[in-house]
Length: 141
Image (tube, rainbow, N blue to C red; front, side, top):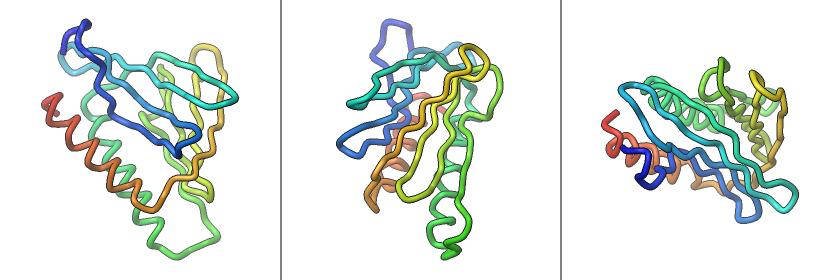
C-alpha cells in the first residue's frame, strides 16, 4: 500500500449519529501508519497512530472477547480492552457497556482523551469481523 493509495478502513464503529474509525494510510514492512477519526455533532477529530501486523490480528481477538462477554450473562462486570496496546501512539479503549463506549486516547503526545458513546446494534460485531477479514486480506496480514 503506497502513501498515495486510498486509506483502508480497518475499524468503523458507527451508530448513525457518531462514529470512531481507524484508517490505515500506508505501511512499510510490518509497520502500519494510520489515523483514528472521530465524527460527531460535538467533536470531529483525527489523531495519527501506528501499529504492527500483530495489532491487526489483536483487533480480531478483541472482537471475540467482546462477543464472549456479551454471551457471558454476568451483568455486574463490564469488558474493556485497549487497541492497539497502550504504548507510544494514540489508541482506543473499547468499553462494552450499554451504550458501548470508545475512548480515543492520545496519551503519549497531548494526553487528551475523548469518550464517544455509541449505540451499536446487535449485528455490529458481524460487520466488524467482515471488515477485519477483508482488511487482513488486502494488507496480506
